[in-house]
Length: 617
Ligand SMILES: Cc1cc2nc3c(=O)[nH]c(=O)nc-3n(C[C@H](O)[C@H](O)[C@H](O)COP(=O)(O)OP(=O)(O)OC[C@H]3O[C@@H](n4cnc5c(N)ncnc54)[C@H](O)[C@@H]3O)c2cc1C
Ligand SMILES: O=P(O)(O)OC[C@H](O)CO
Image 1 (tube, rainbow, N blue to C red):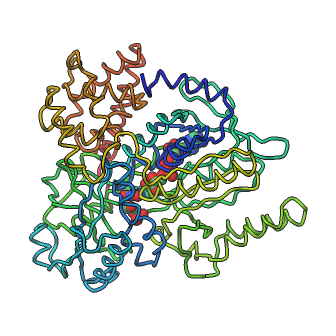
Image 2: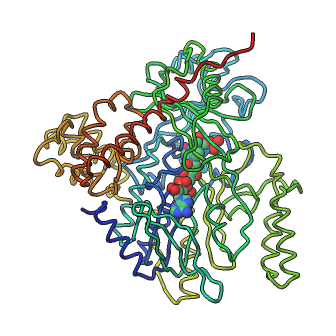
Image 3: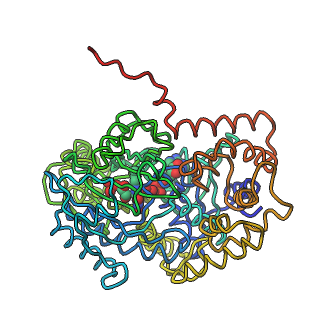
């Protein structure tokens, strides 16, 4: 049991009895990126995640590693420059995960268009230059209206001018997280899922020295002591900071919900990822992405104040996305009954203007939100009562210096930049950003963490080159992906798999494939194929997979892109997990019920069976 339910018990024991150098709270891509770099530097690192790893936003993205070409329109060149350069870095450290897949950008002449044929070429040239792909096989080019329709004959031809084609990457977001977490564990990090931070510990000097946490698997509570704590809780960042009763953390997040829907590829056949204006003059662009015989499309971008752990797809989200897809693909006549799966996630957008050094500020508008204004007044009052320092006031003012008109920005206008901040009690918060620039965000945080460790604690942790720090499964030459995959496919076939099955495992597990193949020496588990047996047993023993939903949604994506296999797959998966994890019948029944609920939610059963709205005559 390398990274499993068994080893989790030992990890919890160590977290209780070790003073860490660094405690990370939040096991999405941001926390995972910090964990792998900290552990690689020899920093005594712990990470706690209250759900499954990646169960928050980092398994609910558009599953792209991309620079956000549309951000060029709002001159957020800083974010684009950071993220588009990071595409190649992420591919280099996780070569079995992001794959290059040129994007088609159809251009329509209509009010509110993001680009026209002239500006799209400028944007693509800038995008390529920032990414360093000019002159390569992936250099961008424009195509005529006929060429666009040749590629996607179902696209509406009305006002279609032509299109652009430029490089971006498709990604497996949840897999990228778990591979970082596994590597951090391999490097000595203490990684624990289903542990929730419920309080912040301070010493007599008012400095943060750890967290009070709850193991959600057995409801026990305990303290974890650490020299430094970093908040990487994404959309929850303000909620977590509110636990810190020694500090007045101004709210910074403006979470917006984004929804994706999945249909069979035959219902919406696109040969490549396609990105275009919605055509509703709402400032939104819209992805349509082919994946494993399906097509998914999205997203919405709406302010959100609901349940952060379970953001739901609502009728208005479905109506919006179907309206857009039926406008752009008028022959598809898509309805809710075509939807096979769906997911909703929360963007951790930074509402205030105190973005990190990674991002450009916005035009100085002078207008600020009530929250920011109140926070400033409170810190000035505290200063006058000798409860805050001059630095606190200066920090609050600096947050307003390049103020966006926060209240005036639509969700899609808010920068996708990141923020790195240390409060006076020492608590560090790394928030915002995207999956694509997670490595760079973490590198910035590690530079701060290493500086504090040496200045305050005389802990001198060596820097690592995070651009070469490969994740689990990614230990091979990133310039040789096809040949490496061919090798793992060959050994998979030798182990009794079909070519297709071997390819699936090689794509999923990369350089770990050799270990995966050892997990079915005694043949397939009852009701499972040899491939599924290998994959499930490896995932239970080496990927901290604790529930059927962990496996079918986040470790394999079957729930999203292979809905037709679930009826046959779910019971044998639950049976094999029960066998391995020692579940009694009642636990088994609970797990099967939770899986059925997750499948029903993904398939929008609660909307499909809802009575049709009664329209007044
Ligand atoms: C619809 C949509 C589409 C997107 N598409 C893309 C894309 O294609 N490419 C891209 O690069 N980016 C994309 N993004 C942005 C990207 O998904 C996010 O920036 C990124 O996933 C945020 O990761 P995170 O680790 O900061 O947050 P999360 O992944 O949400 O992780 C935070 C974790 O903290 C945990 N947590 C919270 N409170 C506590 C606590 N008290 N104790 C313990 N744990 C706690 C949560 O359970 C959660 O797992 C998209 C986002 C959305 C919503
Ligand atoms: O935040 P947006 O609007 O750029 O949308 C996120 C995309 O779907 C992929 O990053």
